[in-house]
Amino acid sequence: MTVLDPVSIPNLPSTVEEFVTMRDQVATTPQGGAAMIVVALLAYTQDETLGMQCLAAAVSAERLAEGGGGYQGSRLRRSNLQLIQNQLAEQPYLPHAYIQGTRPENGYALPEPPYVLEFSANRHSGDPAEGRFKVFVACSGAATPRPVTVRRNALGIWQAHEWSSLVVGVQQNSVDPNSAPIKAPTRI
Image (cartoon, rainbow, N blue to C red):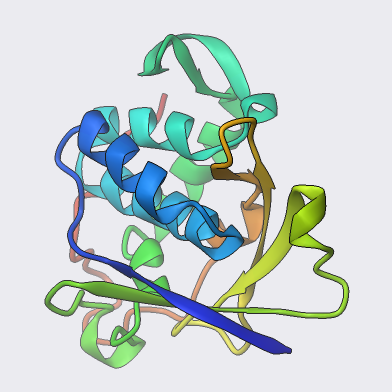
């Protein structure tokens, strides 16, 4: 594995405009694009409407469907959104596991910002010059980092193309396995 530069997120956005501004600054590298899908998942756990908009702005156009509730008239495909909803209903703290300093023993409590995400790549990750690359996000709730495939759009912004491994369960919150430190999202 090759260690990539970490990504630092100064704070969580409170509007989709803040998210897009952050995305345009952070997602200029493959790992920045992967970091933004994590930020969108974090936003979703706190505010479903905002999170849906952020998710639509964080993923490649091929993963979107036309329709309200998303960003610029698009939304995440129903199957992708259902996967996210199902997993976060079980473990609403799951996206926290990608932020350095969280761990099952502290209930995946977020540290004070900035939030730092660590990444790696391997010999099968591809070549960023080709506009498609697989990065691996360090996860405090799993034995191995989680893969995210990103694609560079026409504006040079890296967006998540395949991220399903990010919503695979993590080690149970050991502070109180029956409680959720954040609100579980409702289902569509």
